[in-house]
Length: 348
Image 1 (cartoon, rainbow, N blue to C red):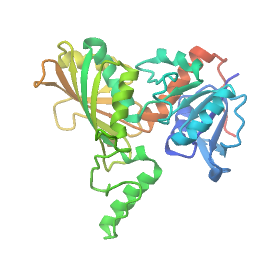
Image 2: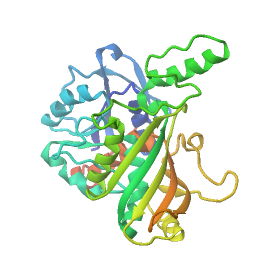
Image 3: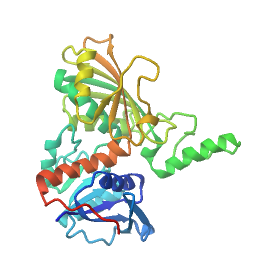
Image 4: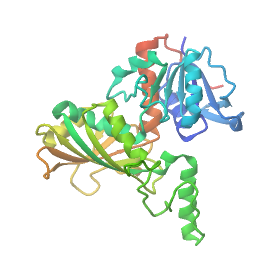
């Protein structure tokens, strides 16, 4: 017997990606229930190439008998329904920001801290980190194991898909409008996003940082090491899918470029493409649709005693959200819940 899995926010970018990835990886599920708001009742979502599922209403859904919930609605929705699902006996893997810093909720990237999954028993909830944090800590973990990281300075170049489908539509509409001389309409973003970069993601905090920048620092410390100092500048760029990051790392001891390159090549979830020639690096367009965190442009930082720079790119809808959640579910199913594997699902 396999698992009964509910996907909350199934009509959104991340929810659809969760369904796609579960099908790709043949997650051992007997039943998959897509859930969304009442506006989406009866809509159809794809599961793999051949199967179509009908969306059901989240507000009235009875979670009893559900084993795992993959949840990616808004934070306010998660605050209501993730505890409701956990109370009914499901384990919730939540992609929103609501639970990430709760001390009783593990914040997990499977390549970095899979042992933390065991903490799900406290609340019945496991949190997925912010997409920009997830890809960075995958790249930092093998380096931290070698030389212990003291400080990280990161600038992000985050795609509009991180802000949802409406944001993607806004980039498309503004770009088309510029070519036909239509006036620029700003709805999802504070400034024009087409042919522009916006150094503002989430709300501003009292110290001048944005909440996205605070998340990267706080979440990195919770996932990887509470003693790592992190400072971030998070920027929205006119790219549809994939986040890029320019990362500067200061270590406690010397770490050569070759040592770093070798450690990263051997690390789970990382692909190193680092050639000092034209096209010898990975860009956001090339990372879209891929599972890996790509690392390029590894080089020494001569301004500090033990410093390195690198370029890091990943599909934010996959490793930054949906794939990470499914990977957590795979560990949960294989090590903690341990139902017998389900037969391969058939369409219809």
